Each structure stands twice: as C-alpha cells, then as structure tokens.
Length: 309
Ligand code: ARG
Image 1 (cartoon, rainbow, N blue to C red):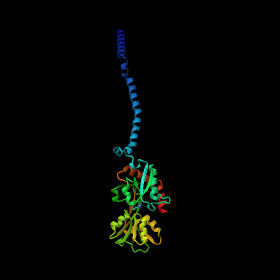
Image 2: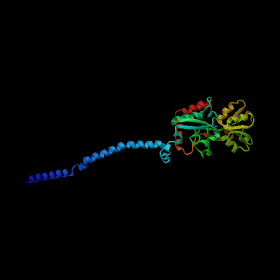
Image 3: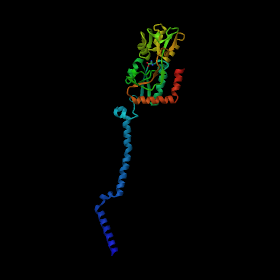
C-alpha cells in the first residue's frame, strides 16, 4: 500500500511537472538556471569585446586633444601634449651673435653649443627643430608667438620669469669685463662714471645701467660691435658673458683682456631655455630630454666640441 501510494505520488508529480513544462512552452526555457548563466556569459563576452573599442576611442580623443584644444582634458592628463610640439616642429629663437653658444656658421646658418643642444633635445622629443635668428632684445617677447622657445645663452632672471618659464639651468656663467690692455680699471669702483659697451637687453646691460654709478651705457645689438668700439676707443670697457668675452678678446690678442666679473662683484648667472609661460608639459618634456642628454654623455661632448675647443 505504501509502495502504491509512493508510486502514485511519483506519477502525479511527474504528470504535473510535465504539464507545467508543457504549459509554459519555449518562452520561458531561457529562465532555467543554465540558460541564464549562458545568457550572462554572452552578455559579458559581448561587453568585453566592446571594451577595447571604447578604449581605442578614448586614445583617439586624447591624441586629438592638443589640436582641438580641449583645455580641461589636457590639464587632467599627466602626459598632456604641449601645444608647441603638436605640429611636430619646434621653432627656436636665438641671437647668433654670441660665440661659442650661437654664431652664424660657414653655411650661413646658426650654429654653436646652444643650437646643437636644442637639436639634441628636439631629437629626444621627436620633433623637427627650426632656428630663427633675431635680435636678443626681441627674444622674450617672441616666445609663444613668433617662436615656440628661445635658446640664447639666456640668463634666468626674475624679470624674465614674469613673461616666460625656464627649463632647468644647463650652464653657469658670469659677466666679464673686456678691457684694453693696460687699462686702469681693476675694481667695481673704477667702473663708476665710465662709458660701458653692452649688448642691448642683456644682463650685462642691466648691470651697467642699474648697478654702476654714473656709467654712460652704450647699447649695441651685437656684442661684437661693442668690442669694435672698445678697440676704436669709443667705450672704456665692455661687459658681456664670460665665454663670448673670451672669444671676442682673443680676436684682438695683445690689445684686449677679458677679466672675470667676480673681481668686480658680479654674481654667477645660469643659462636656461625660455618657454611660453604656463606650458608645463613642454617644460617637463624639455627637462627630461635635458636630463637624458646629460646622462648619456651627449652634453659633455657638446661642451668639449663647442666650449672647450
Ligand atoms: N646671458 C646674457 C643674458 O641672458 C646674455 C645673453 C646674450 N645671448 C645672445 N645670444 N646674444 O642677458
């Protein structure tokens, strides 16, 4: 009896199950656990497939950012592209009247330590470098408009920092005083009231104009023109950076001597590359390139080639 009831129960249950399944038809088959799992997997797989596309789209948006000037995005990203580099050409202003840092080479093109340095930096950044020769006094105002950056043995000063950002310093300098052989000028006091030749807008100009009492300052667009006037007796001395002073004085050996400005109390100065104010991406990239150039020996080679020889 028990057995019969059990069988009957089983039969009834089977019947009702079959009925239930039959009644529900295919519509709901996907609701079985297996089907659901399969569907989930499908959805996930699809989602995963879509993901790379979405990423690629993001990358495109990032790459386009500098061109479309989406400022907010550019600032958010740490590897934001500099606007100055976006066209693949770095336009560099210089004043090629400042050997050995920059001078006009035999081929008529600017050459020198700074030119070689900025070309090496351009190579690291993967951009072409175009050099524009102009007056030193026009350089700072041209950065961010006529040229992207300037390299010109330019000393970092607080005043210039109001208009431009500087890279890390790459060279230490000091003003020298070029004197005619046998000049009586030997100390800072001796410079008072003298006629001093300088290159317009340089730190030598600033020292002569602001710090030397009663000096009459003759400003030239080219340092060499000041030196020629020193030879002609039109100025009593020329104040100009150490390395150019040594080069210029050596052209008139026996007639001119270049004296270390430290003896006149002039402070050390540092050269750096001037860049548009606020282009932090550019400053970072230039500094990284500069570090690499120092680490791999390129920098020392350039010093040897252009400055020590
Ligand atoms: N170091 C000085 C300055 O920054 C003189 C630089 C002159 N450079 C040149 N390329 N003429 O004022």
